Length: 430
Ligand code: HAM
Image (cartoon, rainbow, N blue to C red; front, side, top):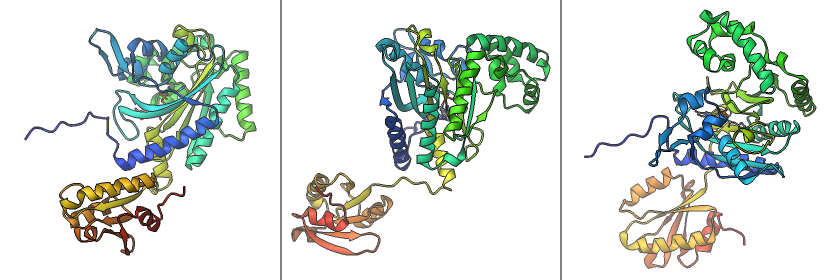
């Protein structure tokens, strides 16, 4: 026997029930985004590595150690996308989106990061993201946050979500802050955890995000980025907060909120949860990234967006509903075929039933299984009804239909699939 080939660590297939939940979740997300005028964009999964180095930033963990990059046959370095914003902005630059007319996009699909897999953290995971291009007003950030809040409400997880928000100011405020932060931290260098010591050279702002207790204590005394905001940045933040207050949306101002991607300026935010996710408690994150279009060779276009992790949202939903969360399964009709002679007739009946309804899954057993194991399979499929296409019944031009919940049976003529569907309550009204 050949050796089985294991899947790749941190990259899992989705089984039917999970895939159904993902699809249902995406439908809610899409409906909410489209209600705010976002339209779908399908982004490539593979991009030139340079796109991510230039946008997410060379000193970030994502670019430094988490990308799946390789040389293609023509020796060009390509990477599987670790996120969607860079690809969306690259296309915006190509198409001129947001330059003359604002544009709003949503996207959904797999992203790839070589991280240490754990609960809520995978190497292939799904994001749902939205990007609003060409709008300078801070109302955009507020609209994005209200969209998130609407999504949490629709999904029944609003009470489990906490919004953290801050401002990174513009690059000038950030550079001044960075200098002072580095000076402060150098004074405590030996007390910092190892990872933060290394970051002092590469990406000192990310030290603010350290989970290490000792480093956390030192950071209590560190200068606050909010004190370095210029008048415009401070007033933008104040306006966002006042608008959120006006909408009754609660938030926690967190001056130590720095994002793991370099393209942000001004407003940044994260939605965290304390339910069911352990250390991976960020469900959704985003902010404004006004300079990115220019950095990628386009005109200056104001922009903001967010992305949420579907797996994390599903874990949260399951925890919030005490594991009650279950995809509402499609109604299923199982056609049991006890003899090979009846298979062709069963195939025809299945097609006739499918012609009459798209709401029911019609499953036909086309293998050699015994009637007993077919009934077992019908149970496993959670079929509401089993159509028994036995030779005796077919000889009389009939099939027997059993309602699985109470065992009640009815005979139907094979020429009347409508009557059969009507009895099962699945005939679509035309
Ligand atoms: P991000 O914070 O890197 O932002 O990712 C957004 C969300 O993706 C996270 O909050 C988390 O739910 C999910 N996520 C990230 N990494 C993993 C992982 N390894 N496993 C499972 N879930 C994960 C961005 O990607 C930005 N592009 C967001 C954005 C859009 N900003 C502006 N527009």
